[in-house]
Amino acid sequence: MSSMTTVIDRWFQNKVAIVTGASLGIGFGVAQALVESGARVAVIGRSQDRMDQTAARLGDGAIGIGANVTDKVHVARMVESTVDQFGKLDFLVNSAGVRSFGLVHETSLHDWDQVIDVQLTGTFLCCQAAIDPLLESSGRIVNLSSMFGYKGRPKGASYATAKSGVVGLTKVLASELAPTVTVNAIAPGAVETERLGPGLTEEEKAPLRAQRTVDIPLKRMGQPADIAWAVMYLLGPGGGWVTGQVLHVNGGALMP
Image (cartoon, rainbow, N blue to C red; front, side):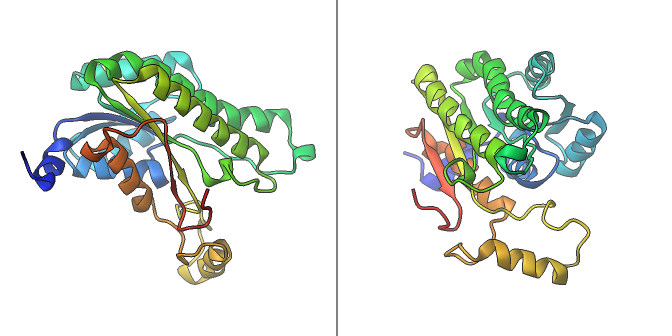
């Protein structure tokens, strides 16, 4: 029997992944971890130019595909292009997202629809389009939910609802695609990405970080790498007997 370290080292070699929402933050962190581990990755975002730049940042083994995850035609092309380029599909990581904040009685239908469309319907469409190639490869799906799918954050109705919906979709898909494909979700807490105080200096960001870490027992915000490690576990050789689960990665801020 091979040692665990040998299995881990070999596992991601020549695996093929799609990562949506990959131009920044968690999505980019996951794509970077996959490429560095030897996988070939199609990075997905709305702008082809931006995704070409993202793929160039990631280096050999990455291609950029401009696609809107709310458009069924775009999503079908995204999967077809990846399989045409790399010959198969092993992993799908759904990280595309938008957000909109406001009290329920002040939320416009437009803002509500936009968040639900990208976060929930987009995840559904990407999973749906990827089912056949993932069944062929005995692949894996990881969906990005959120701590706020479990915790009623004021002003976050559309976001919390979409992220709760992702959990329900994950469990249904895990049941439908078993025993061939595993389907799990990650529920991150407060993660520091480019969205934290854009344009501010490190000194100016300090009070923002302090505010976000008051309720976190581990006393720091998460980093994209913290989420990438969790995703890599679920995609990796140790995640083969895990399906229909939500892995909470939040520094202890929520202990469900």
